[in-house]
Image (spheres, rainbow, N blue to C red):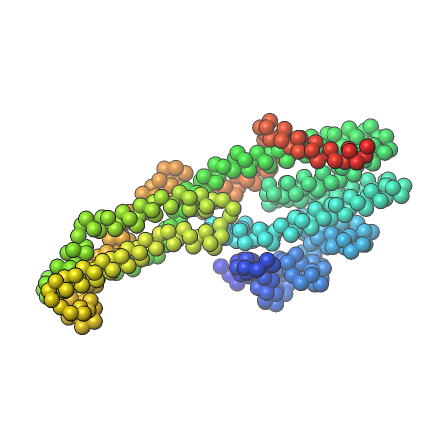
Length: 470
């Protein structure tokens, strides 16, 4: 991938998410923005994650570098209204609404097109960078709603309604962004709800039946969008999660197995060479006798079962873990370890078994302080290496056969091999985008239970307000 600000964003996201503290490490972004000083993307990141005293400057810089993106101005307006300058914030909000688009600079979207597994890692890392943006947008909507209430109380009702109209424009602009996700829809619904609550109060105070009727119609639309989003996460996303679990886990396992294929081939060739050499110059009787005991068919089968049966049992929860909550470095490491560690454990158990068998045989032969490796003849060392090469090669062949079975299962289940994960992941990504489009167009049939859940939640939220009014 070329050295661009997008790549710098990828790397900074992954590096900043590796910080184990409670705050995101912004040092990678500070280094990146020095390398790409004219990157709106990187200035935007610092404007949401960087030094508090510099955030407004970075957001202004991002806005200047990308004059068609409304998002930096929205965040700048939110910071302005929180500092007690509502009139200036309203002006910034109005300017932002006149811009053409809302771009969240989602790094993982572009990463998914290049490398689905990398895209999953970046998606998990970018969650920490994305949610402050959502929180700031909601803060702007709340601040604007409070200012509208003050304008209405001061007799400037038209100004209050105009401001709330700007909030609704911001919300719909975010929801209808080209790359909008269901999270964007839920955040937009929350902002629309804030504006709608103030409008309802104003229309009730002024006795506007038409205004109240309009609020009621829009309320139904918000309920539909909210319930539709919840239905996707509750119903449609289960199927996508299942597909991800089936495809991502074997793909990650393959990532551990396939790079070792050359090593496995080399070990097996070494085993063949050592076996041929041992036929010409056999090892001493003591080593052969202990090897026959340590590497008997029954003992090997028992050892393989002891190691690989837990591996098979562990695959299901690991695959489920891979499909929930986004991919993280820990999850990927856990899945890869589940594939690599068995062969390492098998080697360790084989070494221990061989040494014990040798010591027992040597002590039976009357040797004192027998040494397994030091002082051994070259042909005996060759026998030891041959046995271990055979055990390791056999383990890797076993894992390869297991991978073939899993790959075949993935193909039968989702119609794609793990190396075609990009196709499946892109399909999942596009499925959500298409769902958002259909939801906004009213084409999704939302199950009634989700609509009832949203309506009951709204009733519970309104009860404290009604008691307060009494």
